[in-house]
Image 1 (spheres, rainbow, N blue to C red):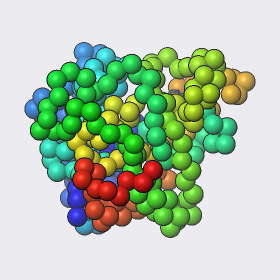
Image 2 (image 1 turned 30 degrees about the vertical axis):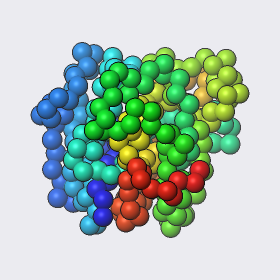
Image 3 (image 1 turned 90 degrees about the vertical axis):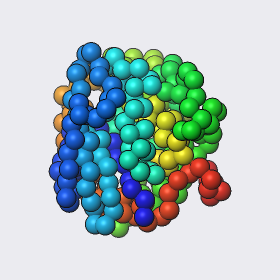
Length: 267
Ligand code: HPA
């Protein structure tokens, strides 16, 4: 059974609190952990168990808008891999571009559009970690999305899927940008997750990513975007998301991980 890595969006620390046999390590005590001049190094790595499944949690992530480089935003994923995680569950807050979603919905990311203008794999490639030109055609494991849907269904939660566009932020989008994102095929927009997904796929880790829809994207409703509202919605769905994570992580661990040599990818 593989270890499962988890990256928590802000406000989800309670998930890590619930792990059995919890051990916490502040990022500042992990060798090589990148420090942003803007934010210091808030956050911690937490290990523990859900049932019999070993879980390694990153509570607090690095965003480009904080001043980290794309390379630095992927450091945490490499740390999870070094510690034996073969798969990773990423969570984030996102704005809904697709009007079929409502604030409070949890959506499985099926694919992404990288509009960050940078890539965590640029620069020399470490061949011992992964290939120079990694494939991203099943970047968000089809198998894991199906497992997540089964996990949700087991307690009455139905999960839809969507394409996530990553933008650098920190300003929210303009209404014109949201119309553009809709035209190019995005259902969700956010400021994280994509560098981590790219780095994880490079390492041969399988990825599941769950967006919490915290708001309708700019220009969809006749009102301004408000970060307080984003936080509030995140808080409102926290319990549902934690329940989903607790239910799906043991299922993922039991499914056989590591993308690298599997032939089961069927997008
Ligand atoms: N845009 C970008 N990132 C976000 C949003 C949004 O509307 N909501 C939460 N994260």
